[in-house]
Image 1 (cartoon, helix red, strand yellow):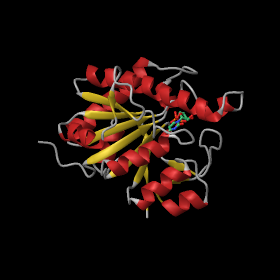
Image 2 (cartoon, helix red, strand yellow):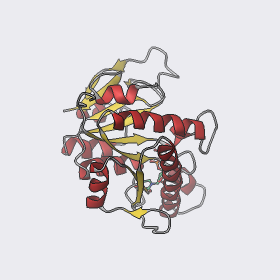
Image 3 (tube, protein in one colour):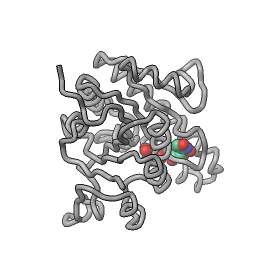
Length: 239
Ligand code: UDP
């Protein structure tokens, strides 16, 4: 019997870029499979996991709006991109033997379930991984905010942000080799210092709902399960 995880129910946010692997856009199936294997390990260790996946690998609304598509329209295109990523992740999760459901904030009933909070909770209780697609369903938002919103609605014990690096740094550690890495931060620190973790509305929403944000590397094997036990290498953001 595995020991009880520190974080019983979590929402894992992965950006669209994290699915690209070494490609410059799109979905790298091997990378998606690796992330699915991490999730499988976490579920097997006793955590309930729901996910939000971004869409930046396929479409980024804001930058495209500047090129002549109205912002709201471009944002809807971005939300549709997140549905494609969610379906790819669902397929990968199912390849590991996990059951999973995609729920979209923009109803598209031939493709996936619509977002229904109580139904999503029920899926989690049954050990299914629920992937929340189409962000908040509203333009002018991001999937970070969608993740903080769903984490609050699902009563998650933590919001996990899987990134390319092992925590939050004072500057991009790829570009600034001596950037400082933090083990812990307060929500206020992140907002006041404008640290690039998640957008400000996601941080504020998590703060209001007292949900810690844990930033870790999604590409380091075994980190997700370790973080859920309260171990592993990560930055924990809380009050
Ligand atoms: N988006 C939106 N509302 C939402 C979530 C996403 O309009 O609630 C759009 C927005 O255009 C955004 C795009 O979808 O640029 C992709 O999401 P995001 O940039 O958060 O993806 P990530 O950076 O995590 O890959």
